Length: 287
Image (cartoon, rainbow, N blue to C red):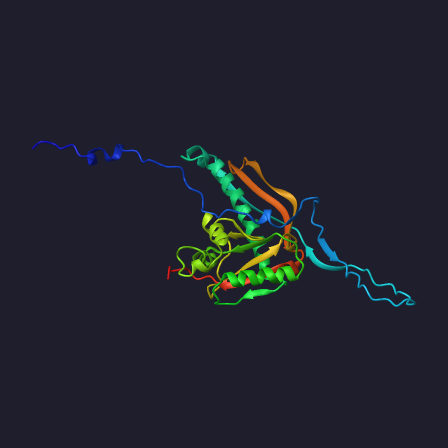
């Protein structure tokens, strides 16, 4: 019988093809560009923000004697820095045997992980805004809610521009309402339709609002999530030591450490310049 010479005859000689290993998926970061950033100090001393009460102007009669008013600051926020970091350790034989550029890949992953850590820390401050709360658990976001939040911020005398951060699931009803997917889209402003449809799920400007979507806003146990609308000074990031990776040889363990560390603090800075947005964050179904 003739041999057909199938590939199974040489299966032990066929090499495996290894594509470059992918890093863990992480969302793009934007928060450090839309908050108040300080980088003029080192160490762990707390940074405080204080505010004067302001003068009251009174009507005066011709013979009235004016009375001096208090002009004393009071503390409204404190940022306390702390250290953060992480380590990878690789043995010499792992590096020599690895089919990938494991040191380079690990270094890139460390930088992305640190960026995500700082991003989620800044987002966590939305719950501490005291300028007001718009929406409630279980409610579906609408453009009316967003404009109500803008009105509340303006009433607080917060300076423009205003930044908005929503989860992709919270953004979806707004995008739908201003797109061809909505039966009432014809009632929306043409400018609004243009802005929203130019870049779905990416940064966009609607009036004085710069809207971002991020998967770093996550649901609670009830499928609700807290987004935010704020003026820049509502949140502060105080960087005392920029993130850096230090490579250290460990001869006794015959390997190399990659040590990533930084020192920074974060928190609300002018909490009344931020509005908490509480809305449903269930997975959309397209209905």
